[in-house]
Image 1 (tube, protein in one colour):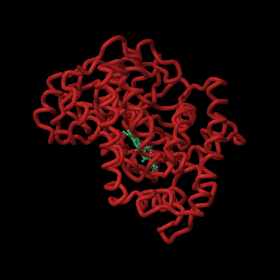
Image 2 (image 1 turned 90 degrees about the vertical axis):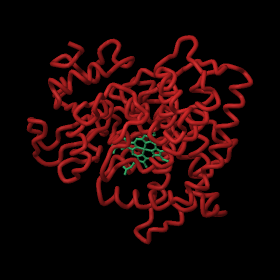
Image 3 (image 1 turned 90 degrees about the horizontal axis):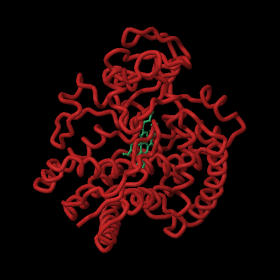
Image 4 (image 1 turned 120 degrees about the vertical axis):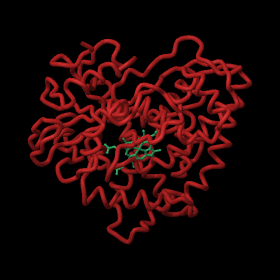
Length: 402
Ligand code: HEM
């Protein structure tokens, strides 16, 4: 037994779970794919079940007010933030906000982004080369997304420093268990982030940016529908900065660690750089940055042989579904040439990641340029994992690049 069965509990993870959750997931998938945890919530681990739930908006809801009210208290800034983010809402509010964001992230905006990402990645690789070694997370993976989204929203470069910690604190508050310190840090971060963005938005209203400035496009409201209120705009900008930050950091960190662990695949990528697209997809599948999602059952429904009543709270095991051999032959093999690769790292359906093109662009540029520049890079010292169930990534990953 690896923890499946009556003992498995997301709020009290078995020892070693964060180092390697996959044997636990495999056991759940096999023996209890729709598993009721001790607190009454459900954990689902099969690809087919997750895919169905993500695509079914009539029986499954993203509205988290009922879950977050007891967790944070309705007066809490964390409650205000998370319940205003589009990701934790249903139609019609979700549809209205999503239309704005997807409409603002045009191919033109993305194309304009590319040269800056290439230049940034090369600058970071230059610095690593000069030192011969470094921490792949701080010196590379984490330095990219914050610059990219900061750039997309037009946050001046010298004002980007606090964004990372605000973002980590606010997302950290989504973990199943929250210490009083984490809660206080999260609440302070929402307040400070809001104050900062309110000034940024006021400046941009006075002096609008160009066509490739995402914030200007969001303020301008190009959908012709009901525009976002100031409260909605600010909280969803915070969400955008958060959504694209730690997840993409982890895509890059996990991806490079995977390539170093599978030298044959690293050599294959260097020999066939056209495999980079598939490589990014395989990294997303194999070590999904976002391991867990949630939905609320809104109408009685049968799934995987279990009957779920309205109000049942579901945790969707994305990391588990992405290793399901029913969807991926030889699922525990890391294969950058895998096709098809219908992974759920970006979820699916109406709430599928709205920033996936930005994440893929960053992943392609960062992984390929690092691999080509340092084909002999290797882990030195002791890597440290971030011990969290929801967001999978490295905290420290010491490497030598020579
Ligand atoms: C590798 C990086 C990323 C991963 C793994 C990821 C994963 C996800 C997942 C799983 C969801 C669905 C959540 C749910 O409905 O339960 C999501 C939603 C979202 N993501 Fe990402 N994301 C990444 C990067 C980004 C970036 C770079 C941005 C912004 C530029 C972004 C913006 C969003 C937004 C706005 C949503 C909400 C969509 C909606 O509710 O309609 N993400 N993401």
